[in-house]
Image (cartoon, rainbow, N blue to C red; front, side, top):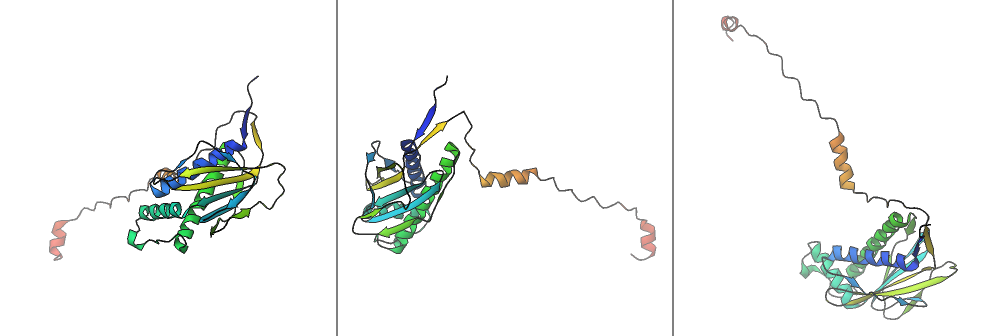
Length: 227
């Protein structure tokens, strides 16, 4: 009898951590790393200087929350904007700027979107997310999920930017296990560019216009007509 494969809450947390590092590293063209040690916590909180949270629901429910220090938020914001081709002199210099909050919120949206896609591919279940909420705060705010969780679990992971600035990821969700009943192939990633290219290649080749029929012209007749 083969050994049953079980995916736990911590395995789901690992998927989320990979989404954070993958999205931020790609967006900022810089290194983002996370600690191999995960902290068990009793509650999730928004903390200074910038906190962002998003709820997800579906196959399982949960809350993802990231707390950025001012230095970490500005570093990620600057690297992202410069990577997008924006001149440094046009960038905000204060973490309280609306531009910084908008960028961090967009990156959070990309992170959770990548996470939900990975969960769908690896676990064959679907979860949806709401719009991320980004807040600039100077005090700790407790955030909880507005639903009844039978066995809630919360985890905190420490992340480090290329300049060694720190930010924290917190995940709260019901204790859950996914049990693999049989082997299956993960869903392939969909590449829109490849789909368009394949469609163009499969189109029938356009017919070349038929050559104009050759007409024999009597040059003597044309000379008599003065043409």
